[in-house]
Image (cartoon, rainbow, N blue to C red; front, side, top):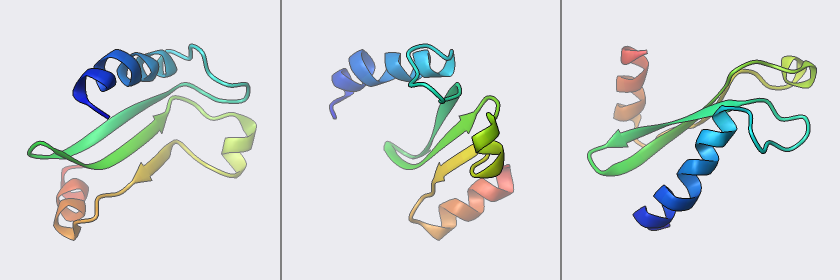
Length: 80
């Protein structure tokens, strides 16, 4: 995805999702955070703003796609 596509298409959808707008039925609002290493995205985290009953049983507030570099994971945990 190009930077232009990200800014024009993906980013507005992410902002709407964080506000609870245009979500599929059963979804809760969530924000997406990116972990950067210079100009490269190395991690991605979805933080759900609240939990519905199904997420309380099988899920949680955080969905993470962790970085591949162990050093970044360690740095991330230290900063948390």
